[in-house]
Image (spheres, rainbow, N blue to C red):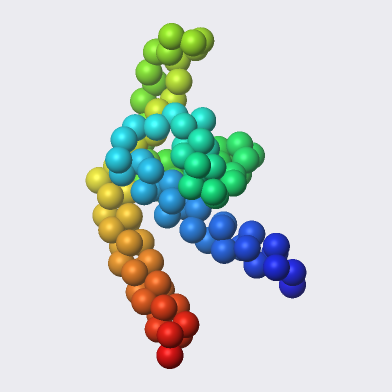
Amino acid sequence: MTDENVKSQMRKGVLEYCILLILKKELAYATDIIRKLRNARLIVVDGTLYPLLTRLKNSGLLKYEWIESTQGPPRKYYALTDEGNRFLSELETAWDDINNTINHLKTN
């Protein structure tokens, strides 16, 4: 396995968590989500994001609403559902546990 393969698998593993973190703060259009992920140096392509958003919506973690746009047709804006907020809280706990484990292993 190459260095890039490992990095790719790690990014895939945290992508769902990152999307939920973005949507915890505000409604977001898919292009906004991609921009925020790229600004955080997590590169994601449309072909990865859209199926994941659909899966999260179908799982009851996200909802969306159509909002009129001044730059074209209405846009689909995503937000967390109550279940999505609960799931994000669980992911935050899991992330803290993993982060603590890694930090422990790095320093001991």
